[in-house]
Each structure stands twice: as C-alpha cells, then as structure tokens.
Image 1 (cartoon, helix red, strand yellow):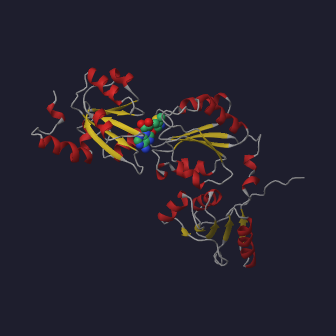
Image 2: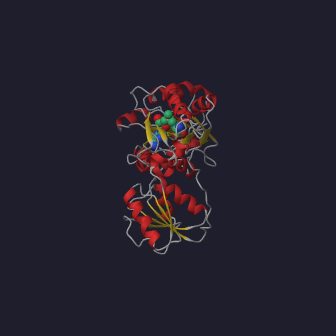
Image 3: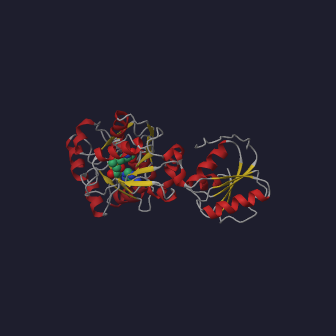
Length: 375
Ligand SMILES: C[S@@+](CC[C@H](N)C(=O)[O-])C[C@H]1O[C@@H](n2cnc3c(N)ncnc32)[C@H](O)[C@@H]1O
C-alpha cells in the first residue's frame, strides 16, 4: 500500500541550513528557508538569478563551487538538491556521519504534483517585463521556478529558461515580425490541455500580460475550461522602455497623461497637444503612416519624437527627431524591432535629445524648440 508523505515542520529561524544545489529545486527550498528565517548557506557552482540576487543582497551565503565533504559540518539541517543522485548521496552520507538531518530532494520525475489527472493543474499568466532577466517580478520568478510547463513569447525574458530544470517542458510560441504567428486559439489550447493534465503552467509573456498582450483572451480560455488562472502583472515596455531612454511618460509641467497605441488607426482618438505623451508599440513598420496620420489629425509636426530599440537589451539605442522627421530618421539609422516610439514634449528630457537635436538646431541658427513656443 502506498504511504502518504509525512510532513514535518522545523524551527529553522536563526539556524544554519546548508542547501547543496541552486537549480529549480534548490532555489525553491532556499526561498522557503529564507522566509522561515534560516541562516542559509548555498553550495553550488552556478545559481539561479533568484539565489544570486539574494546572495548579492546579503540574504544568504553562496559558495560558488561544487560540494566538498565538510561543507555542511556545522549545519543544523542539510538539503541535497543537486539533481545528481551521486552528489546528493554523498551529501546525505556526510550528514549522517556527523548526525545532522539531511533532506534529499527526489529526482524531478518523482514530483507527484506533476502527475497526470491531478487537480493541481493551473495556469499563471506572468508578465516578464521588457526582456532583461532581472526585471520580472519576485512573484513571477517564483512561479516560473515551480513550473512544469513554460509557454514562452519571443520578447519574454528568455534567458531565465536556462535556469529551469531539464524536465520542464518549454513550448515556444515566439514569433518574429513577418513569421507566421502561432494562432491564439492554439496557445490557449496548450495552456488548457497542460493544466487539465495536472501541470503547473506558466505563460511567460513580454511586458505586462494585459497591455497589448492578449492576456485577457488567455485568462478567459482558462476560466472557460475550469482551469484556475492567476495573472501576475509585469513591467510594461510602454512605460519602461521610454524610461530606459530617460523619458518619463508623465512629468510635472510637461506631460499630464499618456496613451499607448499600436498604429495609425487610433490617431484620431488621442489628445493632440504635446503635453499628452503618445507611446507606440509594434508600430515600427507603420511609423511613417502613423506619423503622417497624427499630423493630419492636428498633432504638431515639430513635436519631439523618439524611437527606442531593444530597451534594457544589448542593442538599446535612442533615435530622436520630430514627429514630421522621425520615420525618415529611423530608416536612416537602420532602426530594428523591438522598438517603442514616443511622441511628446517629454522626449526633450532624454539625454539623446540634448545631444542630437538641440546642437543641430543651434548650428542651423534656429532657436531650440520649446513646448511653450506652440500656441
Ligand atoms: C505585442 S506587444 C506586447 C507588449 C507587452 N505586453 C508589454 O506590456 O510591454 C510587443 C511590442 O512591445 C514593444 N517592446 C517590448 N519589449 C521591448 C523592448 N525590450 N524594447 C523595445 N520595445 C519593446 C515593441 O513595440 C513590441 O513590438
């Protein structure tokens, strides 16, 4: 007859607990130990971003090398979670020799929560932020670390996938501009099917799931199928990518509000003054048409404009011009996706504006453009 798990709770607060391994399992254990107030020492040649961040913040000690006998000599409790049965067995036998409790993490395929048909299946729609690994939320990272299946977009923070256990199923629904996208109904079906099979599914998305991310449709598909679903907001590129270029979307005395658009269709629906910031997502290919449409709808052609490529990434670059000239300037500069365009007086706060536009205007004998010059 199969035995049920015997659950024990230990007073680890203030006590030295050694965790050997800092992959998915080690990270999960470490997180719980820190929450319980343990003095954690992690021994692992490499560590997940979460463990690294905790070590940098002084929340735990990390010895960045493989385990050696004696590492846990003064521990009150030891966790072996390397994923290698040989190393875990060595940790356990070392602990037993000195009379220290050792918990050995079962190999990944023994994880009962992933068993098909169990009611534990669920979906988390996680906003991954603008793409850098350290801009996901703490909650998003925690859910990712515990996932059985990750369904990932192209602009999500994909380097985080490298730290997942090899038995985590990765479903890549990322698409490049021009490629055929994976139809939304197929993505919805993957989420629902895996969750109904008892899996913990993370839908890892770029930015925020509910800002031009089709998160609402995925949420509704899960609810419709009776699958529990959680939405974890993310740092949207609409606000963070301009910020990376030194542009606040609102600023006292300069911009009182902002709109996020995806193209020219919305040109007639937004305030036309420069103190209302326009942020354009997914709009690079249509930039010329959108700018022309905005001007036709009454926006000032001289209004400052910027295009920011690959915000927070290695290719981050800001190109500035005016609403009338930004599309041509972007073409000249060979601007490539992903990119966010910003139109509004706030663009003047970008260091790129001060470097590129104001000296050029001065050289041409023109006074620097000022928002208050406009009627
Ligand atoms: C389908 S939308 C998704 C937006 C996402 N849900 C969000 O909240 O950021 C994708 C667009 O976001 C913008 N984008 C996302 N990440 C970016 C980045 N790191 N740098 C520049 N633009 C980015 C680009 O305009 C891209 O075409």
